[in-house]
Length: 240
Image 1: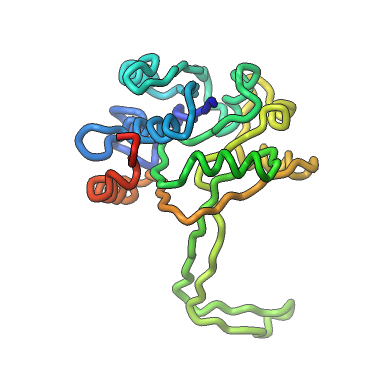
Image 2: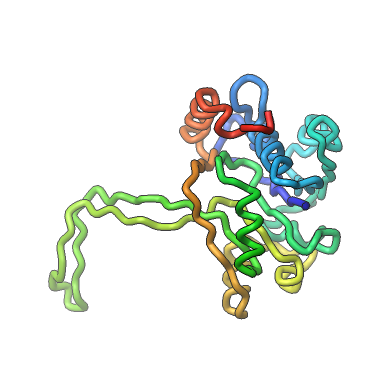
């Protein structure tokens, strides 16, 4: 199986770290970048070939991962000459992909079972399966709901709402996605999935019990380092 990893972003929220290296090379502990962990997890799930969509400081990614020899993977690179969003880079490589393939952000930290996600995608007959995580949002104020005349209808003190959020991890069916892609056109995955849904395609949200963290902000990055240091085997398991 193949995977396309979006590794071209500038990671501005994680500055000043990303002035020196691309965000996927942000180290977890002393020796392992977050992207290396993701690659090891994908390999354990049966992925043999990875395409890295790169831009910002791409030469450092090439120097670190090479052609994937040290990880037992085949890695190749698709260079963007301008930002293309989180789905746009797929257009340049989709013709080379298998019928189903993973797409992932290069900076996610998760214990999700990639093998299970791939099987569920096939079992559900989905065109795209979205790795999803339940996230609770607490409102720290009394929430007022009013009618059109601004008369109070309900008053809820500090409510908590539960939502499914995207983890930045997908399994996609090539023939369902390809018609919506144009080489060189900027496209984000939310726009791609909205277009596919309005066209009758089947998008399944896979929401297992697992740990997930987006390391986009400095506080999240520090938390990721602490969690990985104390629970390394939870993330790597048999891929160590």
